[in-house]
Image (cartoon, rainbow, N blue to C red; front, side):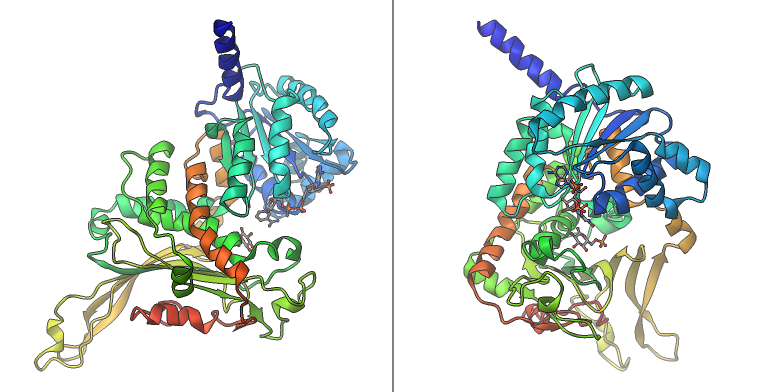
Length: 513
Ligand SMILES: NC(=O)C1=CN([C@@H]2O[C@H](COP(=O)(O)OP(=O)(O)OC[C@H]3O[C@@H](n4cnc5c(N)ncnc54)[C@H](OP(=O)(O)O)[C@@H]3O)[C@@H](O)[C@H]2O)C=CC1
Ligand SMILES: O=C1O[C@H](COP(=O)(O)O)[C@@H](O)[C@H](O)[C@H]1O
């Protein structure tokens, strides 16, 4: 009996993790895309898959089944695909050949019976396109459906059992606090192993995010000073010019803290704060990222009051206040801006604050990291007859959006007669021609999913640590009345976010430089 149980357990684990080794040749797979007519699929996912096809990472051995409740024919679905990729190509024949790999199946994810056919469809496509039985299930739907899809895929026999891999891709948001994220994770891991689950965070597909480890660990002159002895503070700004647009239904239940800080911002923090992994493989990197996230000091209510700031945009620039946007309740207390000061309880960062902020309807669209270094302990130029001489902090800036680049502000001598100092920028800005070749974030991430590389996906311990960090902030904000609106559309956010830094004798580097 015991022997039978062991064999049964082993067979289940083999099916769950079927052949889930990283794949070198990322060209064979059947995709099942839940939410196949959704905004994300049409705007981002199909163009990303098309780019992989155009560049040869996908060619003949792939198929995609689009799924939602809508009744579409394959031809109608293919017409949507061609429209969705129209900005990526002028080659009609190529677009049509690409679209011929797409199939439509009307499917309600809450109806268990509907899954029964999916296994058969996948088997047929596996054979037709010789996909080696590899299957990628992408859930691009409202988060309440993530768990139910994973459970049914397993229970209704949709997973590949013939040696191919099974990979589950989950969109954000991954829960709305630690408890709900844990519940979701338990649901997912009862059907899939951790190494089969790809939690999407599109900021991890951005060029600059991926460059952080290279800039740090590939340059001893940088890594040697990457600690509290040399770095005064780190500032991360993810600012948007756009407002809530047509996403009030989701956004008003999330806010900037859950929408941008818990995931994208803390992921960037983890890359900046982590120690050097032994090697650049996903397991090693994730271990170091988790260690960094777990060493952030979790605030009590007083700590949250002192170290976090929330905001909501009022009218400005001729545009309405958040509370007057379509679909937003007139008395909404939702945060459209969040800023905070992170401190680490670890030897590398002990006294160095990481300031973070993200908001909608700000003055400009920018994603950037500004690292301010300490000034020399003694400013020898400030003494004697050499006037005026005030050395500035060196600042290393990593530009994420809309431009990709790196600048380093350094002190040097002004070329005028006498000893005067000035700052100059050593600057690399990616050219427009090169930027046009940079893969889209979702394109990179799809490529990694096909290869079985989890490096740029959030692991469960990272997600858990991030929720544990933001939960007390959200809790205090949910239980205290804000004085909203507190920043004008088109500004850089509430005054309190400037005061947060001023209390430490610091200020936001951008846009005040
Ligand atoms: N849109 C964006 O810019 C971003 C979205 N995301 C995330 O991506 C995911 C998808 O978002 P988005 O595309 O905007 O959402 P949409 O509301 O545009 O699309 C939802 C999709 O789910 C389908 N659907 C809804 N209910 C069911 C059901 N019971 N059974 C089967 N299909 C169903 C809908 O089709 P139908 O009604 O025909 O069933 C539709 O195709 C979400 O998790 C979101 O948070 C993340 C970052 C950005
Ligand atoms: O995940 C999200 O990101 C976008 C911002 O992404 P970006 O690549 O344009 O910087 C944000 O607008 C959205 O609210 C959020 O859900």
